[in-house]
Image (cartoon, rainbow, N blue to C red; front, side, top):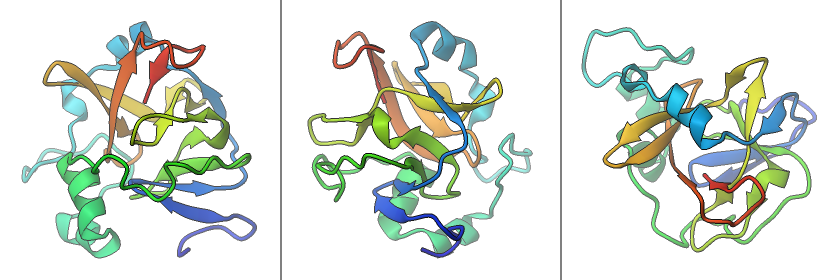
Length: 170
């Protein structure tokens, strides 16, 4: 796909894409870490002059050019993909990583993906040094997760469901 470095493979996964050759470690974000990272200032800019905290900054018109209508709705407007709609819900690659569909930033290793009911699910996310690639913010009684590179909406994180050893689902 466009913007993919030589020697990597890229697959679309709803609001994510998967590539080969991760260079960062994958770690679970436990509930206490997530609570420490909640920050209402991490919201993507919404028609304001406020500077974004995210390294990748684009105008609304630029996001609309690079994302499909559905991707834009999910990533930039905090929408929800229909359950079971994602073409990779039932595919589990052995290698590579899932990156943000908007900016290609590595988010999850392929090994962190696990079967769930209707949506792509992961139990660990990437960290580079001490910075988590996934940001967390309060969202109407839940915890929304966003790409810490562009602020794109990735979904929500859930704890205590006993699906995996990390006891969390993204």
